[in-house]
Length: 127
Image 1: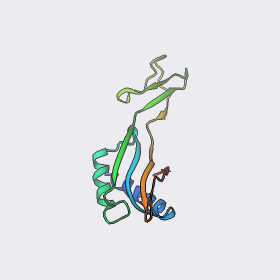
Image 2 (image 1 turned 90 degrees about the vertical axis):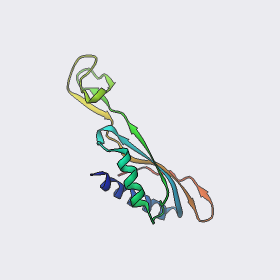
Image 3 (image 1 turned 30 degrees about the horizontal axis):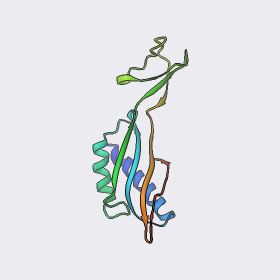
């Protein structure tokens, strides 16, 4: 289950960002995950709840935005959505396809509060 390793890295990044920005509590985290990462969102949420316990992110909501797969044909430069992992160009039937979307795995943003006031801290970091 690589979700555990992903969440471990996610927590490390969140704790570093929180310490650097004087954050007392993280209330929500928006994570972008490409379909090609082969990650199960429910497993990520369960791991996040476990790893967040007793940290600055204890009780935070993990919001996962799943990014679909898009490709670009190297033969004719057509860009297209890749249905059901069928990597074939709809314009020329070519199979030399570059993946241009669907491999993402990063923190898009998180909402947090400091000791004295509420702040919306934006952070993007590859996990």
